[in-house]
Amino acid sequence: MAARRRSPRDSDVSLTFSVWQFVRVMVRLEESARLRGQRPRDQLYQRWQASWREVDEELTRLGKSNPDGFAELMMDHDAVVSCQSISQLNQVVRVIEEVIQQLSKSISSKDGNAEQLRHLRFERGELDKLKKRIAHRRPARKSS
Image (cartoon, rainbow, N blue to C red; front, side):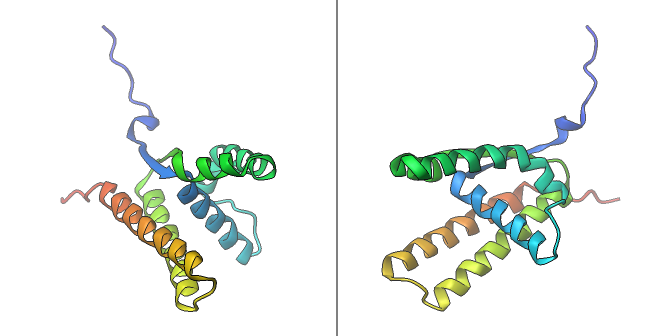
């Protein structure tokens, strides 16, 4: 029996996001690139770009014709993507922290009605749980 050669993908860490969480992360990656006056070129964005296009196109289609389908896709479906390195996992955590900060600012400024604020608090809480879950997935550093 021949041994299977280990491929780089064997060390990938798979991450599962609710679609709405994935949307928040990808939009934040795009925003931060625009603030720098660039197109999103970082490895994480490039790695997830195909999944992002697929989700974005489907949400756009549903948003035009099927609001219930749009809501179902956002809230009841997952996006599964992977990170190839500790630096990519760290970037995911940083991006989620940035989104949480944005949500906290919106909540503090009381933008919106009570229902909108409740939704923002929900998102912030769920993203905080996601951040902690991802942070715990990072491999421990090897001691020498």
